[in-house]
Image (cartoon, rainbow, N blue to C red; front, side, top):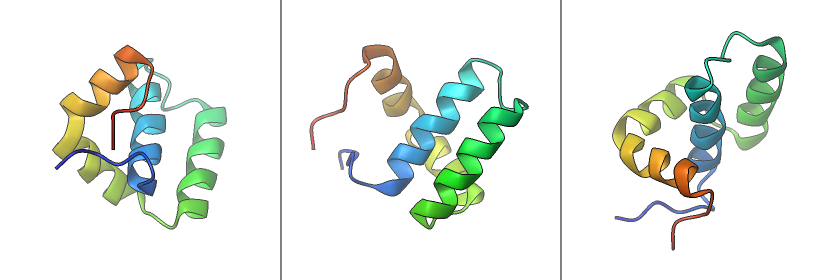
Length: 71
């Protein structure tokens, strides 16, 4: 099943994974933006972590290409 860019977990996972890859998850700016984002999207950090674990290759591919996968 392809990932959907309109899925709130997709957006939150891309945000979190991009900061993980940069080694910046301890950055206060990341924490403020990330926690505000997941609150607004109505998802939890655990859901995002689980989504990353289940879709890591696709998410990393998206980040490398810098574009959304086709819905």
